[in-house]
Length: 464
Image (cartoon, rainbow, N blue to C red):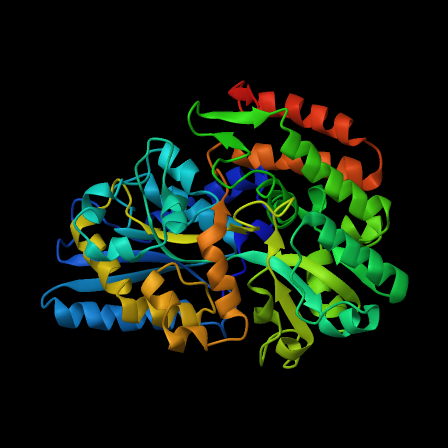
């Protein structure tokens, strides 16, 4: 099963982070022991091991790649160093390990949401020299390549898959509302009009879910707001961050337009009750109750939802692929490229203090052959970031919906996850919450965001 993207996960507070660092330091520091006594013929690979003992997808995959690597490279060894911890603790332990050559592994599993903080701290090694000599790098989709690219223009990780986002809709609800079974909205207004029709014709059903507010965290920012904001331009520039000036963007009309959409959903009562929308556990209710029970018409959400509905999962729902339809989130006015998606994911990176970086990248190349990459995507129900895998019929048929979400990779966007991003994200959530509750007008919420942005970005702000 795929790891649910970090977008929907809670962040760790600064005090808790400090406490975890202190508590975990002793155990972590002995985890790898790379140091000066490190074996030059052994590559040490650290990864996040699931806290669910029944989930061994990553362990099984890496064990297989280890066998392949050792067979193809006589005399070389792979030592797998799992870190069994919840997400926030994993980041904490990993950063502690990266600080010293005595504890730094040779290869680490990095989340794209936080990779830039490790880059800024000097914990990771740029991979451009390796990538320039690796023919398979040309097989990776350009948008995925950018996920591990830092402000200095260098690349610090090789993506092992991604996720995308779109519109899930209930075919039964649509039939009752007289809406098409093969729904293809072209504009934001098409989405809102469908929700209005459901509200009018199908009582007892929430017409449209758009995650919002601080309790939803990054799910509100990424699944909700950014899916709107990134559809307000022509797709050729980033509406949040100006890469030319290296400044965050304030005062944009697109930002106000995205807020207006959110305001409309809740002002017209097209979305869930505000109290539900601002419940931090609402995402679990959407996946586990509302969608399976036919109580939600349209859900702006991610590609990973089926992991909750499979055999043995918490909310088995084998009929989901027949009862739900999928549609791309359209751009605001239907302008090119016509649809929008946001993506996250994970990458394999080499620590700056790794003892055996060359051997580590050789292991990456083994992991990322077409055959191994395809095996991983299918096992993890992930979205391919290699064009050759995405085109393979065996991959396409592996799970219902996988082709739809994979096709979105070509038009997806990655967050400008620079060090200031977490604070920027919180400011976005506050603006969303203001228009959701009605406590702020769109203009007031946008002004509030612009003020917060100055502080979050240390004054590195431009106006467009």
